[in-house]
Image 1: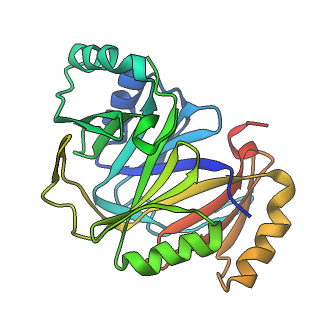
Image 2: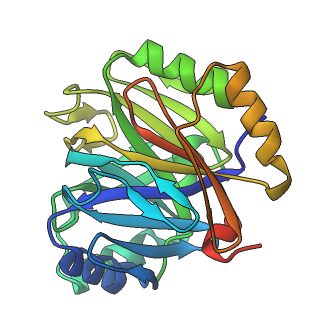
Length: 135
Length: 135
């Protein structure tokens, strides 16, 4: 048995409003859930980016449907989003327009990565699927 | 402009061999890269789970194709994989067979989640896409 895909990936952030604004402004991810503990941003259908307030999920969460277990990430995390081969130049421009500094660009396997930071310093990457021998 | 999908999500682990074996045994993810710093496991085509050795990526990585920036996650992270609605019972059995204890199950939005832990205590979820109003 294999899972079908990534359904949720999570980051832990100092300020939910600041991070939500960053991801919404840069990537156009709509917000599906917003409360004091977390924000759920829709990357694409069936793939969510969850932003959790640092230290806000250490006791778990009782819900009508059951108990959501505790977690609490720390440190500088890494996450990559897939972009098209023909979108690299446009993403460079887009980042520049949004005043997001490009930290590095890397070529590997015929694929291309653009690295930059989110407001918490998390290490974000826009990468083509060729990095993983796809496409 | 929007990214197309999640390309990579990352966890930080105490023992790469132990974690790789856990994810490979439970989910059948093949290993595409294995070195002392990290393991790259293929979830599905174009979606990777990267396991990084705790404290092993703090200085970044010079490669022939460019500089991979530093990162170093800590704490107890969260990650969810998508499963089919009709696979819930089979996944319960599969987890039991692999001696992975189910910590909790949650119903929300007509979707279903099964929560358990990886060897580092990271909070893993197998969830149906209905959790996010998909399907």
